[in-house]
Image (tube, rainbow, N blue to C red; front, side, top):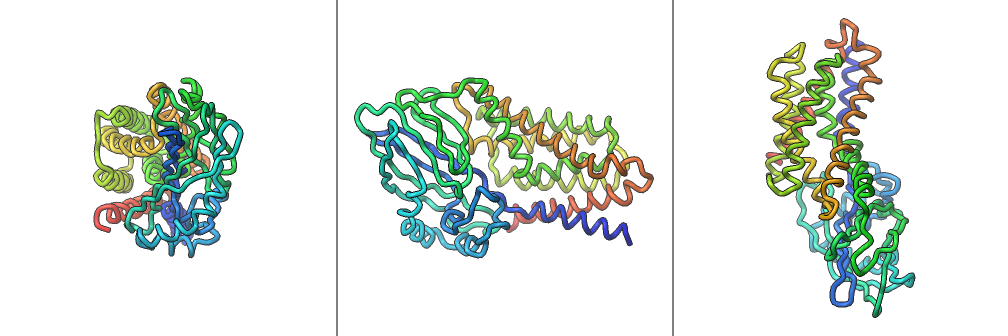
Length: 370
């Protein structure tokens, strides 16, 4: 009975993890144009309109006003646009733009909202507004309300423009209008490490399950290192190629294949007791797919032209630290205590792999048929 209870608890915990609906930080693209600052912000406007506090949680399942959020998420684009335009005055009061230390008014430019797709997934819309620039303006700062969560701020149209990540409620450092306040290579490197880590923990549910699949084949160090090394090498290659624009594969192809990779690893864990000669090759192949998945997220943040290499290296290191963190947690939770038990594979490894396989299969169906 205890075996079935532990299996059920594990399945519930992993399923809960997989069903989380994480909202990524917003992205602000800012450009000086015709005496104005033009802001184009990619964000989740349903969270804004619902009054949800992204400083508390970025998981829409945990919103205090989740019913309101879900109702807004189901609205057609035109209906949601009307609600956003009506609320713009209140929203703009929570966005600050100062030029040379003085507040400047914001003028609404519009909002672009995709039509309703999978209502289980966050919808990313783009709102735009402008701020007039006084003559001979030297610098500006941008900030927005704490409840709107974190935001990546990018200055476009200048060489080595400003790029930074701020929390809701904070403001950027002063950004120079003539040439930007660019981060150094080391600053860029340091900035992108947590971006890569965050894409694994807590946002990368499919990558987390894949890494756990590698862990549950065997808690012995040698098989685990062989698999992780193959996976790391592969996704590093495709991440670099995709970031450079050499390889481009649509997300509608990559995402189902990533789900399929989770299913394959889970099934092989169930039927194979030890690492097979072909396992590292298969893991390498799947790592190529996951690298393309990493690249899609990195593309959302953007890579600064002047410090491209430090940004790419920092992001990749963040991903690796995230993967090692997942393995460390799994080892501390079960591997250290039970990894050498005769019943480990029967009671822990196989049930966990079954749970991982079920979730991966559902994602495969969802990403191809639904």
